[in-house]
Image 1 (cartoon, rainbow, N blue to C red):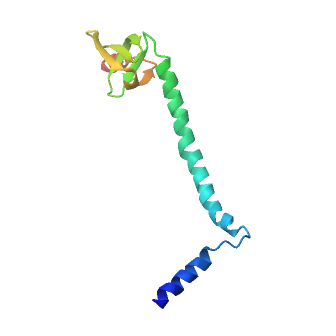
Image 2: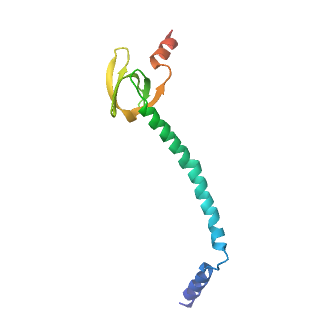
Image 3: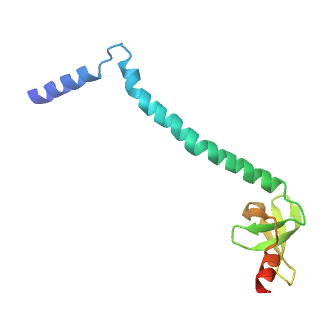
Length: 118
């Protein structure tokens, strides 16, 4: 029983605040790691999210796009949260959620495939 009391007394002495600022200096590396983590991880993700949001807001009929599922097509119409794509040589119309658009393509996938076949 005396051993437990001695251990608890020594633990209490080590946790006591001396008032010289050493406790702040001991937390300084932890604070710096947290700040670096925010700068390295969160800020670039916010930039990426903002770029995706701007890309989705600027979708218009005639844009060539790729969906997150890998389907390439041309936008036929855009209504609120739904995008209708014209896909393939048969001009098949497929509705997609706006969030399913991964990126706007500069050159159509059909043109690229036709060039590779020739």
